[in-house]
Length: 100
Image 1: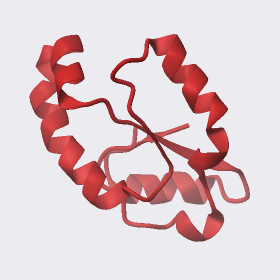
Image 2: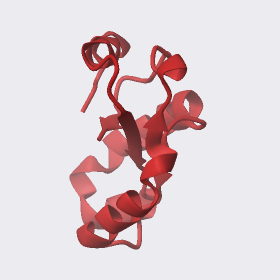
Image 3: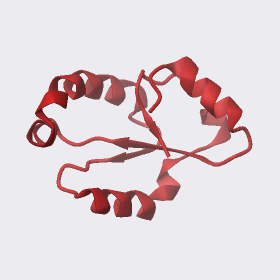
Image 4: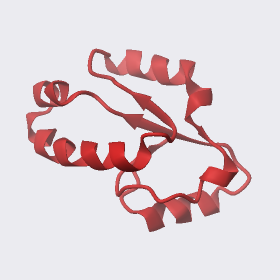
């Protein structure tokens, strides 16, 4: 998990020349509340930032109705959509994102 833009840029710079994929697991708020009530408030704040800053980047997966295995299968099936092209790597991202 990357918490700050500078961390992401350092991470991406260290992977120069390699394929990097960005996957954002984005369950609906009700699913978060049902699965992890303690994470609900944190996700509520994070969701807004992610949508604002990352909506057109990487692969977004609404994992609300998926098991962990189904989520992995979905991500692997759509892996090409998660790939960040080199030109788009040094972008401003919010404080949290999942890189795969």
